[in-house]
Image (tube, rainbow, N blue to C red; front, side):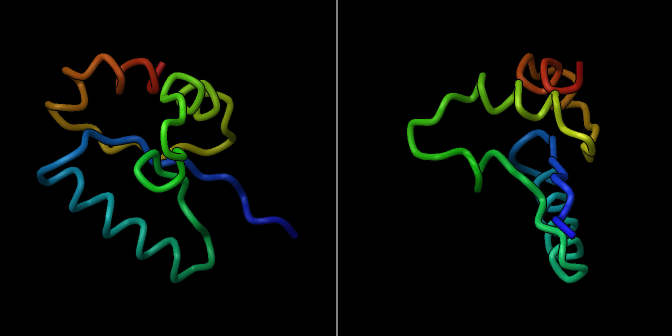
Length: 79
C-alpha cells in the first residue's frame, strides 16, 4: 500500500517551526513522510504550484498561529 500524501502547513520560524519539526519526526517514526515546502519544494521550484498541490491533497496538517493567520501564503494554503 502506498503511503498517504500528508502535507504540513505552518508559518516558518519560532514555535510553529519547532512544532512542525516535532510532528515531522513523530510521523516519520510511524512510516509517514510529511510533505513540507522546505524539504520537498525543489530548488527554484514554484511556491504557487506547491501550494496548489497542497490544496489538492487528501490530508493536510495545519499548525495555526498568529503568524500563520497573518501570512498571505498560509491563508492561500488554508483556503
